[in-house]
Length: 166
Image (cartoon, rainbow, N blue to C red; front, side):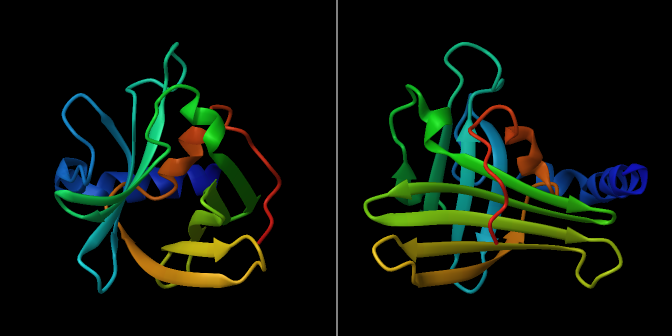
């Protein structure tokens, strides 16, 4: 566990100010909790929200699309938005997998992020859309992280938590 935390701190320190400046779809007065470029599309995935997820009125929003053109925003209404998401985590020494998902219009949207010490690359992320009626994946995209790896761990104890199911 210590090695995993130390490695996470090293990765965060080397991420640099360029990543910290990338806000994706998050606007002024919003916190950019997660940002990633969708490889090969010119689009971005952002999880924007309130500055504190502990305060009354805390909220999260998923946004997808090209910079300046949000194609999908969920849930849209900030009231009770934390309960619209589910976070899942699997951890073993040197390895952590996270999954943040939500259901909208008969589809489940999932951001999957993995970290494996010593692998190349150590951090990976994927956006997956699955049809609920038959459980088939209808889209899957590789993501290039613009925020620190494993940043989604901050959602634990803020949104509903379920066992990891991948």
